[in-house]
Length: 134
Image (tube, rainbow, N blue to C red):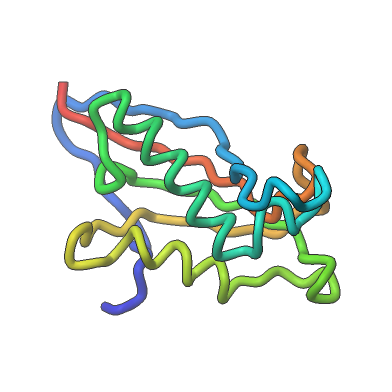
């Protein structure tokens, strides 16, 4: 199945479940106005930044992206795109991390549009649940 999302993921055995708080993108353009979309980049840039932040959090816990079993993606509309969500941009960033030859695992995932995120300029926030053997 080429679509990089699993419909369901089963967790078996003696595992620790790790709930990772929502992560937001980091500033991509320090010269752009603070709190602007331009400061954080387009949806693809923000998705890559956010997933790299999650990757770092997981690494500090001895986990990798392949250990993620569930992901929730919160997105806001891009003012430059008539306040529509750039789902294609999300998938372009996401597909660099999941369902690849290097990292073939695909989490179950929900993606929703919300009215706003807590950080001005952010187009995406991602939270995950991961598991690791005890």
